[in-house]
Length: 579
Ligand SMILES: [Zn+2]
Image 1 (tube, rainbow, N blue to C red):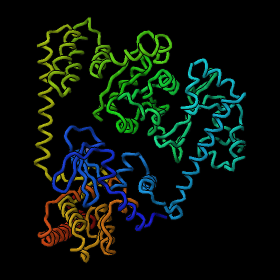
Image 2 (cartoon, helix red, strand yellow; image 1 turned 135 degrees about the vertical axis):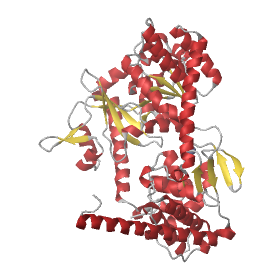
Image 3 (cartoon, helix red, strand yellow; image 1 turned 180 degrees about the horizontal axis):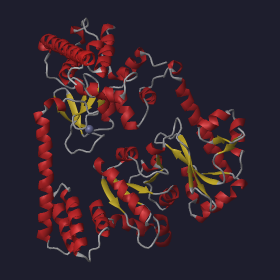
Image 4 (spheres, rainbow, N blue to C red; image 1 turned 90 degrees about the horizontal axis):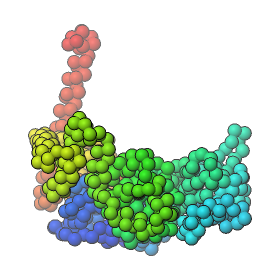
């Protein structure tokens, strides 16, 4: 039911982590055995992302992400474990022993093949006579030349046409329902899910058709009908047209509201336009964007819903340290209408002139207050000061401070004093937080992932030490009298058992092989543990003894405490003491 250890060992031997990671992240610095670069998973300006060629792991000292080469590919290419294995096998020119694997994989490939066939069917319909309504629409929107690159199609207004075509190709009812292309009616008979719609296939960055979005051509509702989430499709993790936008040379990604806007923008020469699919932008989609660009330009509709959505998107994009701009569209309801009226060049100028997100948020904040009243001005002043105080650069604070002061009709100095007050306040709060962390060093030893929190941190620190030494010096510790059951942290215990088993078999410790049985969070934890070099080889034996003693004494302490508690409980029950 899984890839064999031999296969995975060979796979990771042929995909050196430095080569693989290096093709995504320039590893510009070296410190000891480690290579360092800018972390692709969180925004940073000085490299804290390390790759250790000896242990074949990566670990970010900033955000804590880590793992082996397979976890890296899973994370950066947004793939499942088996797909990451396939990806690396392809890279190294290896055959994947399919038959060893999960039947779900076969389901996945079948779903993808079915989607591909369905996309072909819809496209052929659009080109045929039956596709007249679709052709008219495409012509009216002026996007005829985009039909091919986007693989646009037409779903005929009938209940069975896709079902008939796909069953003729050997797909079953179950296939169609699982792929979200057909539904079962009350009497159990199937009907086509998409009918009378212009079809936009959703294609992932690897070129697979993963789902569909269909736009109604008449007045019906909903305007866009999207595939439900399936084995191969998750709306909240996909972006429409990212497969095309990722090749753009524009240096930014244009985030539009609907699919048709995206197609029109591409038609007008803005080849980096994408849209989220029937949802407002999600954190997963934002991370996906951050993988392909460092600048996002939001071009939503000009109405109040569009403005609200833009504010929300800014909030989601900001933590990723992307440069964010918002295009405000004057005199038209959306980018498409604007381009139809004024032409692409005017829109390009709009993009260039568009304000950064600070300006935009300042405008939006101002819109929330009545600046003709004292009350409104004070309210705006406070809100704007908070916004500006959060800006990292003093020049930026000065510039935007001046602008805000003008708006509120107060002096620049009065405004900047308020900003300073807010900054002092948040600095004091930050210092307090830091102090708390330093007086409680044990709390800092907790894993970032909540579900892996340690109950007994003292013991867990020793347990981490055991794992570190066992992975680093397997030849010294192939016969430890310790099992995972001795550990207080269940996750560390399970990791220990798995690593110890590999060591007993004389295999190298590979996070990649462990990735089959452990979650990415657990691997991240282990990578962090492995990236510590505190104990040198000569002291390893002594340190190991100390760790094991610590685990034992903590265990005794714990069981004594449990006994006492049990005894007290018993007394309470039998004699009514202590209540
Ligand atoms: Zn990081």
